[in-house]
Image (cartoon, rainbow, N blue to C red; front, side, top):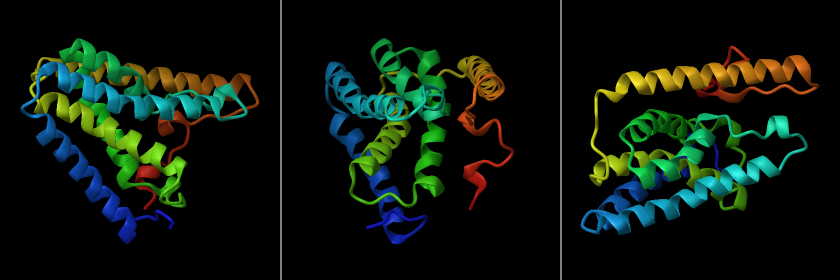
Length: 193
């Protein structure tokens, strides 16, 4: 069955994502801190698996770098979970919106077959990249700190600038073009519907 864009199946998977995050919250709510951290780290392995497969499953290293917000989010998650850093977790709370957008506005992935390994890898990694930062705060592993807003915005703007510079340099000095974080093209797939 094709995943589709706002098809019945797509809407069901969006609702399932929300249900999965809520279920994880209630399952972990009264568990020890150690159990919460181990469980969230296990969920992170799906995100890292997605990054690893993307990195190795292409003809060019230039086109397979994990420079979309979800890839960066996946690589930072293990550190954010184990250190329980306010700065990293507040940052990932903002960056998790990119994973949410990837699930809700799935125009580039609408042709995925459900279930398939590609769909499972894409879908669950984005669900966890969205859900884990929320769970870190919801489960009391990290406290929200409004002082982190400035650092979150600064890190995000710096990261976006560096990724855009990477896109520009790849296009200028190689035979490839990249469009990580959609900085090279004026259109953004989030607005393609």
